[in-house]
Length: 129
Image (cartoon, rainbow, N blue to C red; front, side, top):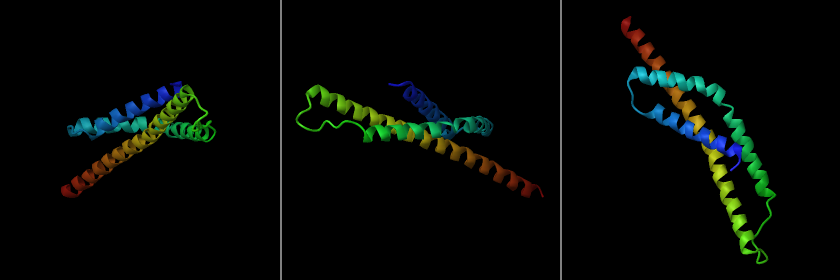
């Protein structure tokens, strides 16, 4: 597994952990701190989206230029190697898509929490008047 896929797998694992932390019920103070921390990480973490997109395009290009091994001429070893490369490519596509999807989910969850907090402040302000 190449270094870029190890990095992408690690990022996906971290994004999944952050998404779980954001969706777990917690006291208001703890939840606001978690959302604030995730919001700070979002901007530099946005670089994962073009990285995953580039890796996805690289996979697409390699898939189009891959040697096909579907005829009777291929040996068993060649066919096994071909199928293994297909499975790795499919796994890597899932990594790319999940990295982008999890980033978007974290972004939307943080945005919803901020909107809810702003609406609560407006409601509190209106009740005080």
